[in-house]
Image 1 (cartoon, helix red, strand yellow):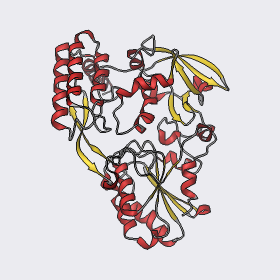
Image 2: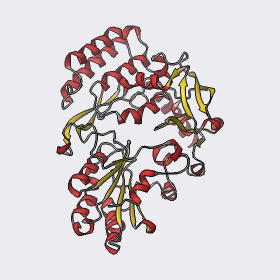
Image 3: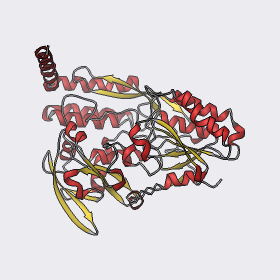
Image 4: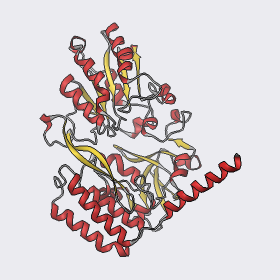
Length: 434
């Protein structure tokens, strides 16, 4: 039986490897690019709302004319840029995740942008002394110049998406080399600022599987004993939410008696398996508590929610509407962050529009009203997975074509606060003065 399992595993591995290693001919790439152009025109709800049709068509012609001189990874990167011409967040293609033709090596560091600049918030343990430092340049190219070079590859509703996404794109070794930022495809010199002085290190890119499964060293000391994860939800935990991290619950509530607050964190717009449904949870653990303690205000943290099914949150929104007397003096407070997107953005706008919620935090990467409902389409030869916006969501009509949600208070995130475990958005929510 063990031998049979071994043979089956070997066959599956061989087939999988063969499929990934198969070559796409230049003519097949051209066919796929033409197919992509047709799909975008036919399926997108309003493809030319930001990029004129003639410019769009011309960029496709240019790529087709260059295909014969490009390697597969270069074609894939150029397709990333073509899809981004739609300039909405739900029309997207990400080279690291949406294809199996080329494996893109990644540099081992997790970066995030703060008011003071771009900082490493996690590094592999062997590079721990560089965790928590400001990244100044790569191969002598300043971070500001690198950011500008990466922008055309980023699908986005607004510029908050750039803030959110470009730190991750910096880890794509092939992309940096293709843009002329690095001299080598898989090695680069990273320069950090340490107490006013510069310190450099040579970093070699690794595969995705190695990248994810490394022993990561958080910049914040309080997070180093937390379950290992490089997900933003974990790297931005605060002292109040820390105890809930290892439970991996996508919705949970906790009382802060000191501030008379019921804090409700909502991380994903789906019912979670093997747990009470969202409807049951908010009924039992949110509204039952608020009804017994009318002095409590409700703080809903949606900073790390990137979407799902918007109807999941209906029990929360309807529950607030059905208890108007409970929220008449103390409106619900919603914490918004750069990561807040898609269905989560829809729910935030519903809470603002129908429940008079107060929005505090950072600008979301989702526009109030925008092309949305991304649907997946597969290119025939390369099997690249392309997401295309198929509907227009008018979440908050009063905002019109505004780039950002109507926030009641913007709270910049500073690295000096982050490293000291200070979460000013969270604190503002708990101690909000009506």
